[in-house]
Image (tube, rainbow, N blue to C red; front, side, top):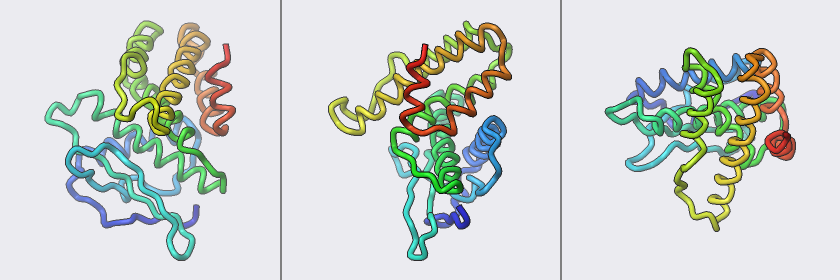
Length: 210
């Protein structure tokens, strides 16, 4: 992507959220070995009342990709898991779209959601010290088990979110078994990079692998 532009001016109200978004972008780029093409902080805007995170995209008249990432302000208890997850999800979408645009590859909504579900575990797991299978399993349970969905399961969006949740759950459980338990963290990062760079069908295959 040679020209990524914000749809609207930079919001100045998201000070804490902007700082966290920048840190998440840095973490994802470091794990996935990505070159910086665009700074997420330049594309942030505050979501409206009651709105959740959303990455808005369009092609300008000159063909350039224009985007803005809308994030809700963190609640007073800014350590609430949902608020953190929305920031991670939004930045994950941003990083994924930017990289796909840079490499002239298409993506799907399911790819975006599945990658974001994995990235939530990755970013939050990195903050846990010490990290082991038990702590990973506890985090995995909070992220993927007993979750509620905003869309009905019969709708297209509802089905997509449920498929992404289930596939990410299976993939993370596989990471625990193969890499977290034995302490093979270097190999796990290699597997995470592989997962990031493949397309939808391969992501789903890796999630189902034993």
